[in-house]
Length: 203
Image (tube, rainbow, N blue to C red; front, side, top):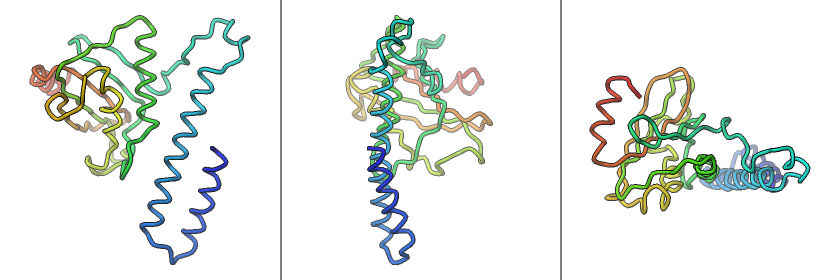
């Protein structure tokens, strides 16, 4: 899969150097190449997690690797599920970023594996608060951010569905010199409390 991605990169380079290629063709090729690379990365990560040699497993290694490089999951003092990603949301022109879905799913799996219980809501609000500054932001417009990966990762697990009445959505931005993506999932009835607490700087 990595070799195929490398080959697709070569074709892309040829299209860019041609100078006569249709921009839409270049855009389509880029999206296909990025999707292929994402799948290769996920497959590699799954191989590393599940197919380690037995002699390593006997050394007391956990079934899931330390995901602190990707983020963390906890239920905060207000009882709200909080997922912190050590990255910002990627650009999403056409497709939902698969790697981000896989990362969130694995963080939730790790949280449950450590003995914690994930909350479930009949209706919830999904609040995504990106912390960044001008130099670190990766996507200019909110509507170009790959937030759908988050709702896809929690659908059927934290909430039963992601329709407009079951799952409400808020995209926020906070100026910070430490880029991160803070995701909160809480009952819709407590949305007002969230924004009051956030306004007081307690989140």
